[in-house]
Length: 142
View 1 (spheres, one colour):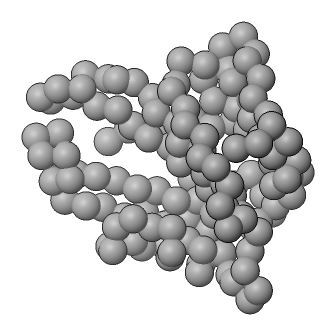
View 2 (view 1 turned 180 degrees about the vertical axis):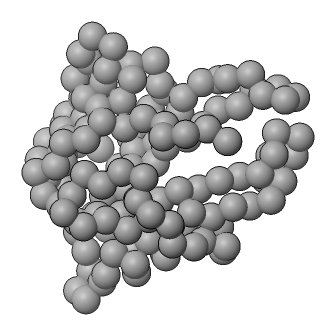
């Protein structure tokens, strides 16, 4: 990822990401591990991993993915949520948070995705906004 598209600044216990290209800024706890992917086809992806935390039979490492791209012509929030959901069982839920004027949330469950640890859960919150600043954290644990 180029320095112009995504800047990274360490601030006390948080790491702040700023992307003038995508009109957004967000921060995550400084203890999380991050991976910045190259921008490809107008799509920017940041993967943040928290933990590890003790699980039933080993360690659990939750992931948060931040995906940013301009909407395609005629694309709705529902369209973007549907192509972003990794599990086929996605269903609409009330948005657990909404940093923009309009949001849509989808949750998918993959039974026994993590063997003894349990099911895999994916919650996606999509919104269309420019000049946005948010703080990323886990909303609830299962």
